[in-house]
Amino acid sequence: MNGLTQRIDGPVSVIGDVHGQIEMLVDIIEQLRRRPDFEQRWIVFIGDFVDRGADSSGVMDLVVDLMNSHRRCTAIAGNHELAMAAALGWVPTPEFCKWDKRWIDHYDSEPTFESYGASHGDLAGLNAVVPEAHKSLFAQLPWCVEHPQFLFVHAGLDPNIPFETQLRILRQRDFSLTRPPWLCSKSLVSSDPPRDCRTTVVSGHEFVPEVRFAPRRILLDTTGGRQGNMSCVLLPEKQILVSSSRTASHTKM
Image (cartoon, rainbow, N blue to C red; front, side, top):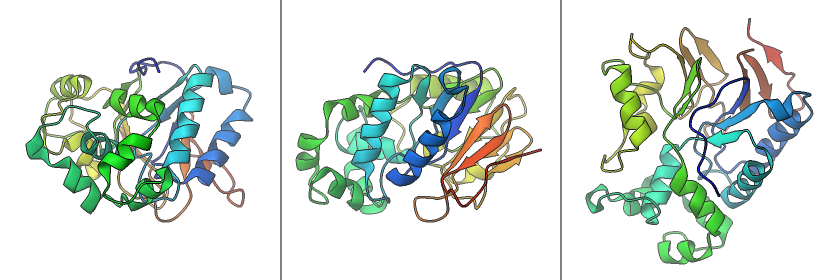
């Protein structure tokens, strides 16, 4: 798989945290495919493909296939991708970060092992059965995707650090950090971007009961991997698609 695009322009469909919920993701993708602008619109995954839900392996198969077939598709890393990739040695994190133990013990990772046919905690066994295409995608995931109007980042930005400083770190992916806040911090989800941030920050990471729009901020993890329907936000229109045929799409005015 070629490197993922980190700078995009034009209309976007941004999909909230998937967490192994394959049926919901299939429904969202089918809704997008029915749109007349499907080929012209970027699809951006906001991170957290894996853990909690029953079929992380199936989700990754779908995402890899979509990226190979749809020329405008990209994604960012969530904390669950960082934890899994670091635990399995697909990205270069220091030993003191102890991602192997952390992912097994604290990330609801058991369904991920099961979806690949490995015993929970058997990192070597899991590493042996994960397809190379999945490993390649995990290793390449950027920490942010930039758009002239939006910044896509899994958890958010620190309001007290200059925007350009954070953007530089996000572009470089500093794997020496024990828990990179832009991927892992719950407090950033409820924080405004720094005052010098020129774009709207779009993120997931923490459950919200419905897509939340605020000045310079959009939150769209409406399942947390445990409840509710998956959301996809069409930008710049601010139209919301949900993964239930019982719930109509609507537009945020």
